[in-house]
Length: 246
Image (cartoon, rainbow, N blue to C red; front, side):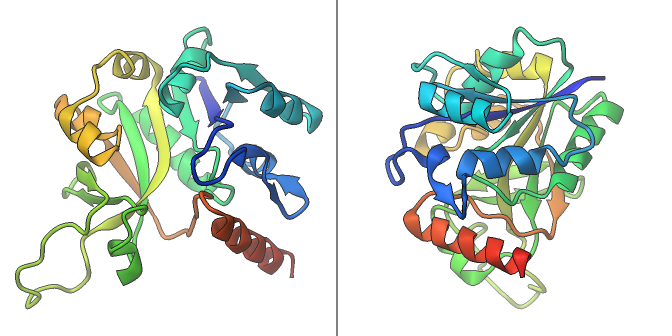
């Protein structure tokens, strides 16, 4: 089975305009993400899907592969589907273009599950050990899972409501990581589904899958990753880079 990694990269960003091209250390963010994803053992190809010529040129300059997608596509997942539709692959990993430290071993494990578990259609990832400040931050998406590691719900709110802490050993919420690995056939179905109610309320497109009665399996990791959304995130990423170089 062939697996493609697709990195959606949109130029416009409300909080960080031109985000894929923002310099983190001595490289643009999109280059950090691309070079990190190249470390995956399970990807047969890696492509940046972008709506902007400037991003296309930068990716090609550092030796990466990139393709243009229509500017009117509503989400990164739609950009992934647009590119994947014409590819001879079975599995598509939607690798977020703003997470330069995403653990590549987690991507490999997610792809491996789809290769060996035909009943699975979508796999995502979540980090154990949520912190109190993450619980209260609406920019940090939380996920609850069942005993089979399937997602029960995703939310920007602190979930679940804990009425009594008497039997609480550790908080059950996990920090959702923006990685989605789809079976290609399901990805093409997903983008044709109309937006769902909870998806629109929370602004979380993965809820469309749950509202349609399908499952999302969750791979667990203890590896820390950050999404770059603000200038402060860029500063934090640069500190992390310096600590790795030390």
